[in-house]
Length: 293
Image (cartoon, rainbow, N blue to C red; front, side, top):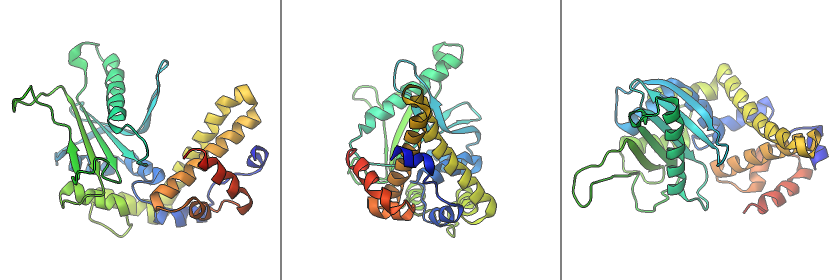
């Protein structure tokens, strides 16, 4: 299989990509990444999540990587900073498997705070205020709420304890008709003709229907694909560049299959059909994915 992977790739053609983009939702890596890159769309989302209608984003970084030499690095969907230097991290959970959600949220928070602490004057006053929104497609706590903010109080009193870290779980399964719930319902469909979410809707309509938007999506598609190639090349130093490149192509293809399965709620066979993966190669990917389950 690795030799075949070197002879060609499973990247979607421009025509295939256009067809696939129409059905993408905000729970799809490719669309989410392109949308969160747009400052106004990102700002619209954060204004609803925070309830601060005047919130202004100074900068936003998608797929921001914080690398750790002695521990696990993290890749964030988006890390934004407002005019008051407060940080906002949006994490869109693409799968609901066996994940320690609360531990993952805590690890992300500590890693972000640590990085920004050492960027400042390294006094406790330089510890940034951080808001993390952990968005999932399903109600992972199964308690029938759209939002689960983490509230902290001093002992058994009603006195709030504010250490500057604010975390909130949000899901698209429960619709309580709040502004956040309506945003989550839009996340599940992200239809090009749905204008209900202001700048967010404008951004998605542009990405799905215009020549410029499709070019942007194509560019992000290649970036995701190339990321897999580069990871393979790093390993290629040990196992040979050709094998490393092939492994990168394999990992990129697997990522597209898994993302399509989750986003479109379809089987592995249906996902490979949508991605136009050659029939003679499909059993290989089915076997590969079966080992991960």
